[in-house]
Image (cartoon, rainbow, N blue to C red; front, top):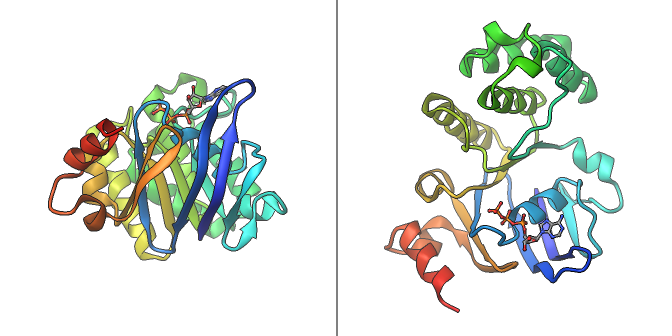
Length: 237
Ligand SMILES: Nc1ncnc2c1ncn2[C@@H]1O[C@H](COP(=O)(O)OP(=O)(O)OP(=O)(O)O)[C@@H](O)[C@H]1O
């Protein structure tokens, strides 16, 4: 579903933020992407979803090159950034309909899925309010609902649990597992190692722009906790 080959990114005047990263996310995977602050997670994620240009390497979504056909790639992806920047002058429902239009979601599916996910995240009563009146967590929930209503083949999230209340975080984890059971794939960054260990069937660890471990969760962590393995790998120079 997602193939990253030899991805390398340097920002202007800076050193390489990510260096020769290779990773494959398959249908049904919940792939956790972990690393210290500044390790290169957001850089990789922004390139994967087509909002960051890159010169070296190749990124493919469902076998389609992001460089050659970004629109076809983006139609298969939902991306939830760590700090969603939504249209503040719209109401919640207007925003969801806008996204529904963008992804050609049918009226019947749209109504059903908006109802289902807004109820799940306790947002139904707020959908008529302006987004500018929402709290940070409410904006995040709306971004999540907007991602889910078009049933993406690949869901990409950057630190999705930051700012969500415990009930919403629990709901999101349940929905992530359901989506993957239905054949979608999920790639997400997190600093919450406990959640990554429980939720993800695969884990990648990035340090200083380079992958230092990746694969099945039980193989990456062995008999140890993910936190122990992470600390050891990150401390080893
Ligand atoms: N726009 C930019 N211009 C220059 N350098 C940048 C830019 N964005 C990120 N970097 C640098 O690229 C490197 C990787 O940053 P990135 O945001 O990808 O890390 P991260 O793993 O997502 O970190 P965090 O956990 O703190 O969110 C860092 O050294 C950072 O300073």
